[in-house]
Length: 620
Ligand code: ADP
Ligand code: MG
Image (cartoon, rainbow, N blue to C red):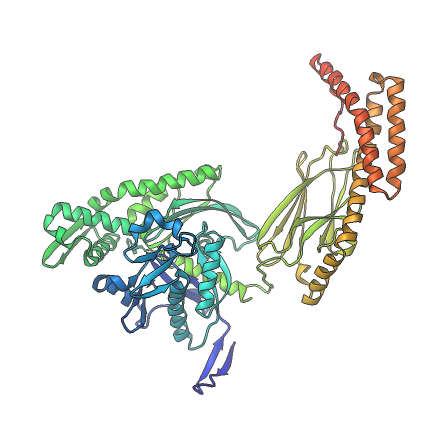
């Protein structure tokens, strides 16, 4: 659907589209994609040839800026005014880059170590955010021409290891380019989405995404569960990629033809090396010329040169698996990303290491953008009829004894997210446990909103406190909450799905938040009373049990004294003074602690003699 707007300045009629675009803002190349006639499509240049826009900027003397192929050409003719690899600077302070300065041929400003990095071109300073915004503008422009309409919303991808500052800088660059960035997505996640991995909510698997681009190498191990992508481990090398392969070729050429040394450092030689490399991905032999000098290379020689660097990437894969505590047979699929994975030797090495055929049907340098456009389309509501949110607006939790709210996913958590906690029973032989799910910030569930409840049944009879019941909340990107309860000793399990959590209007949500703030103090008081009562009830139960079980090893006086403390605790627990309850608990504990120790010694001694151990669990 398109909206028409009129530019009051020019009188032009401009169409607005609500297409949300997907952008891969890469170190070497960037591109934009969208869903065209139902399938993810990367947008090509005016001639319909290339989808990749080199992430290179050229600043001409008149203050104009070129982005992409035209700027890349200037690396040869006017390197001083040409900027590349801006992504390496995003969200960085100069101190972060000190050791890597020689990598950049342009000037990085270093007057203040703690300040954010700036780049100097001629007499002007630019921040990496501004520079990235220029690349994004070029992409925006490209798709606006294709659609003949304005676009204003985007999903942008970043490496899985990007920290908050780098992600925020990416968002800011989007904003500066006139794009509302609806979501920042991890590159490996986008690549998986492009292959349709993780779309089926019932799927559970672990995949590896191997991304070898122009200047960086990343390996990510992702766990996919209920449509949530969790990064289990990342590894890689931020200074290893296709550029290094080009350099190897140059070194090799110089060795075989010393006359080439005079071209050392020239971008022309670099481009020739890159051309040779690309050629060898499809042909066995390359031959070319530069300034009258012959250049040639065959695939076998190239592979010999490449071997040590490829081995480095495989070593990173090993480390990533080790960090994730996985063996390679636990990986169900391997997706390859990045232009450099077009090299047959690279692909073969990955396949051999993971012992799997790699996913390479899509263009490896487009796959991230394609995935971003799919994520964008989901956000646009075209793929599922569900509202999407970035964060959960209110806390989600369950009711615990005494009507207390126990928050499991705090408010403002990024979605998708997953969190869990262990609980136990409070009564001996308890067979069922009711799990009531609530949303809100108040300490008492009665003041929050109930989302649903279910009963975990058939817990095998065990003394109170012994069952281990794990409650897991899984909130997916679409705002659907799945609650699982599992008794870990017996593997009894129960799950519900709750869809209504965003049924609250903005107003209701605001009211709930205000209520929680205004009542914070009163809530606190009630909460601490109820907590004291819960704890006391548990102690009463376990002390009763203790008296019964160890009747024989306790003296009459010990039993009577214990009962006395116990009765006092029972009495104050029925009243409303939390301090009195806490005091009575302390007194009882103090008196019974040595008795419990003695009981334990006796039990252990019996066990050593081969007699059965009774239950000495106090129950929590
Ligand atoms: P990035 O993610 O770092 O922005 P890309 O994924 O676009 O980069 O990868 C760029 C790299 O891929 C460059 O080093 C380029 O030379 C290399 N590349 C592109 N096509 C081929 C090919 N056919 N064979 C070998 N390398 C290639
Ligand atoms: Mg990339």
